[in-house]
Length: 308
Image (cartoon, rainbow, N blue to C red; front, side):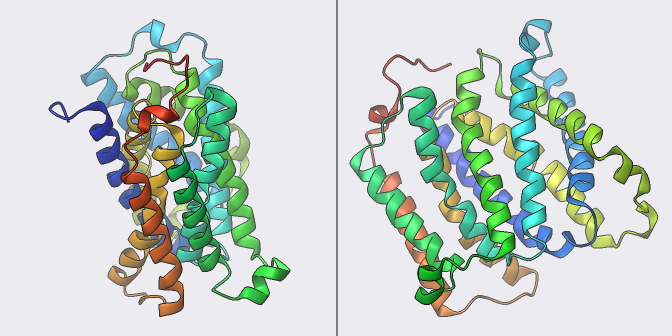
């Protein structure tokens, strides 16, 4: 990405991020009831931290100064591990496309947290895009059933995952606020290590009680994917983009997730959703296009915050 502007680097990172994250929904739905979510993610964080640690040592190195104020990594690691556990807990009952639609509500929450933590101001076009994207998400979540929407009949899985998405949205501006100039790979390593420690401490009894040899092959496939692609790679991509784009615009790429999930589902032989659901997905894509046309990125930056 060396020849690209910082903004272009951020956009490219989030495009790859959205495609990789979508795989977690498609595969996660197949294993959510096969293994405890905390156990799965504890192993995931340990593996991902090992990979990112090796990459950091081979590139930027791991200096002591990079881990000053370790409480930052504990806070961020706790938030993201909380998100991942609730994601797999929600996928026990929520369909993958529906869960992906819940994920698209994070830009709205990220914009709110960005304003609270970084004084980032949402432009009118961003506001319109977030509204359109939110409408598309609700369309998919409620299966275009307006009676269910009026009664607010939300599935248990979707509600659980929504709480996790709130944590994900908080992470985006908070990572920018707490970063002190550390390279993305080093900062990511700190977050992963902290998350791994917290999850192992929380789920160590279940980890020991798990019959690892009896787990079906799809669990191991999913574990490898989420550890090496949906964790190691996306953590770096998200951190890179967070330091180059406003919080709301970073999370705007989540609007692509339902579309990617549909492609993943089709590739896995699960078929495509009906045309009614596709209408809501189309709205989320429109929201992304509105945000990409917004050239006023600087308007969303905090007045006193410089790029770090």
